[in-house]
Structures are given as C-alpha cells and as structure tokens.
Length: 247
Image (tube, rainbow, N blue to C red):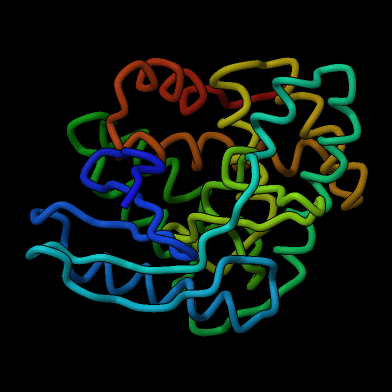
C-alpha cells in the first residue's frame, strides 16, 4: 500500500481503489467507530463523499476503508491558479451551503460538543472566560444543519471530470451553520486573513447572513479549537477568544 498522508496518530494509505485510514494503537476505539458511523450517516444524505467500505483491524490497529478518489485537493488548485481564486471560492462556498442544506438527525449536536470542549479548557482559560463562553453558546440559536467541522479546501478533492468529493467527516455534527462558517473562517485566517475575509463575505452574501452573526460564533469556535493544542495556533486562537466587539 502507498502512503497518501500522515497525520498525528493516523496514516492514510492507497490500496487499489480503496483509501485505508489506519489509526495508532492508542487512538480510542470508540472515536474510530464513531467516525465510521458518522461517515455512513452522512453518506446516506446523498452528499458527494467517498463511500465507506469497511471497518477492520490491520496488524493490530483499527482501520477505516473507504473509496479512493483520484484527483487534487481544491487547496492545491487554488494555490496553483491564484488568478481564478474567485471562481474556486464560489465553488467552495456553494459546497458548504450544499452540506448545510442536509439534515441528519442521528449526528451528535454541535452545541453539546462545544460545551464539552469549553468545559475541558480549565488549564488554558480561566473560569470567568469559560462561563462567558458557555453563556454565549447557550444564547445562540439552535439549528440542525449538517456541519462538517473542518470544512476547508484541503478536504475537497476534485476528480479528473471536475466533480468535487468532500472528505474527512470525523468532526461532523448537526447544528448552526454559522458556527461551521466561523470555524472555516478561522482555518483560512490562520494562513491568510484577506482570504478569510473574502470567504466570509461570500458566505454571508450567498446565505443572506449578517457578518456580525457569524462573528458572534468566533470566540466560541476559537475556544473549542484550543482543545487540540496544535503548536503555533494557541496564541492566535486565544486572541479570538478575547475579542468581544467586532467591526
């Protein structure tokens, strides 16, 4: 099998027409099974995603096998063809809107997941900030849209016929689409603030959403993302957690 990608505690291989995601032995079995179940549930909505084929054990390590999609990520295409960035961003936002048009009642609720994450940040955020974040989260409108949880151009593969395929559904929940847009904004802003603003302007225009409404989610989403403790991100994310008023 050929290695496609390496991530902390997981390696993705190509095996013919299959992509095999193999998890390290210390990765929680419950998380692996939940990821496979989530992908199966999202697949049933009809969204363009790789088909789940098998959950198995490979050399003592759990693995998820799915359809392999030949192509290039939208992130690679955007980087190589910056003159057409507006066209690619349109495609990207349209896909996110398509995802959020679906309902999947058995998925975990986004609000519950964020509340758990905020509660776990005792070593990073003091009790007053955590209280304010919980309060703000509880005050946000409750929706039940499918939210990818890591929607960015590197998780979209464009095949040779130009068709998109959305991958990596390990963080999917059901909830408020503006929260998912806020997460996408932060993922862009980590690398390019101007591109992040271009994304948010387009998302708000296409969904007729007030920019301020998405911005209300930014401190909550930034805090929930702090849980991962990714090197180089903590200071950036804390700066968004501290922001109260936006221009």
